[in-house]
Image (cartoon, rainbow, N blue to C red; front, side, top):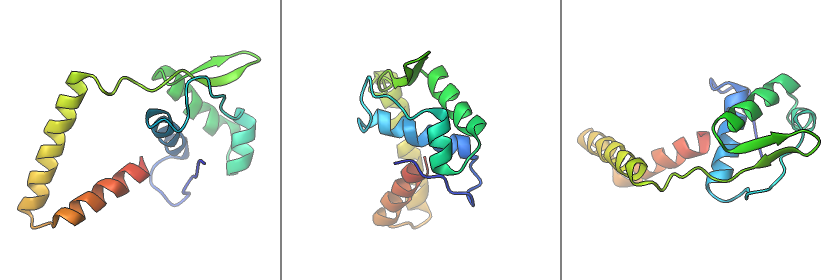
Length: 122
């Protein structure tokens, strides 16, 4: 479910954080879902436990998860990304990106592909 690209310039903890956040925001991980233990995910990914712990701490600070002793880290729920201010800001930024890309001669399909790649990279 989670993959870390060692060749990526994005730090491993951020790759983990962004992938889990995306899964939560898109409904892939629902409220109450228990995340693997820090040690288990670190072992699965071949990383130091501190790397996974940092990702989990950042998810908790952002309100995605809650860490409870003896119950582990559970998903609190998706962030309220549907709020009107967020939608407005997102649209403004998307409009600017599309205008710039079209102005440089990019085809619509290329623009959509670029957005998909950016989403996959988190």
